[in-house]
Length: 382
Image 1: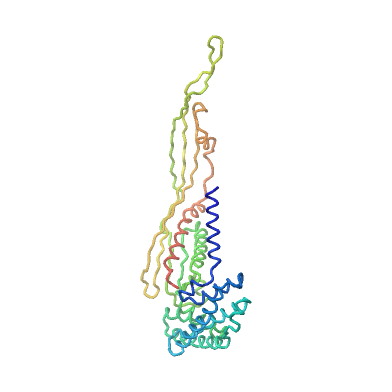
Image 2: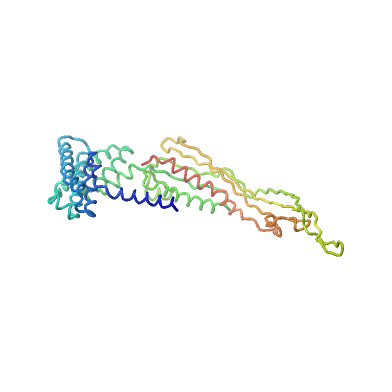
């Protein structure tokens, strides 16, 4: 109990220490915004805290001064992100003013926190103009990777000024131009298993798409590509179950001997008294196993459609084993442990899975491996 109390006491001390911050430490390290926010938070619960009053009184002018100096420096320069920096600084200043307005004691200390609403609007407009211009320039190069940069610039533009010019159309154009377009071919198998192969393909394609959401890569069926009148896919993924066997039979038998000592096997009379008679009992358990084994290999080939060159060729093996066990026992029942009885009385003529089910069984681990592989292969398309 003493140890528990000590732990509880230490926890309370830690919580109190974290909640008692007045911003002084941040102020000493020159982090003036953090110092202001911590001081404001402290003043909400302790309006007369001297340290918090001191910190806010001195940190606010410095936070404001540093932001305005940063803005002034960007005005003098011509960096591509100058307006982004201005937007960020004005947003910081306005957010801090808002925090002060929502703390009565802080508002007494800083009665007129500066707000820069018009300046922020102008900075956002300038940032949108600059992002749109740079995005249009990048998109015009016709380069896939520049198109991706253009998409990000147009997205920034739209964040600054919603619906700026035709930026939404530009985003769609840049997204398409920057996306790696990949045709995924449907695997072909024997006719009686094509339904299962199609099921495998449809689910695999869906998971491949979900695994690359947000990336600049898109997977198409041939039908989807035709619907978009796509004439220039970048890659093709070929899926081929190049070898598979369904339902190979493997049978085995295992014989185990069991014995148990000191088992009551009867009674004896000695001097007119009856006593238990003990002996060792034995038995033999024969366990039969029949296995149906299905396995195969999916060959995945990624082809550059511009020159028909092979970019990747990977093989994904899969195995599925269906098994039935049945057993017979000869001997004294008491010699057989309870955990060895589970296969007694099982009918060995149980109907095995269909070839379709066996196909699904061995493709299940392949499916997972392929999705993981595709996610890793296209991880840099972002």
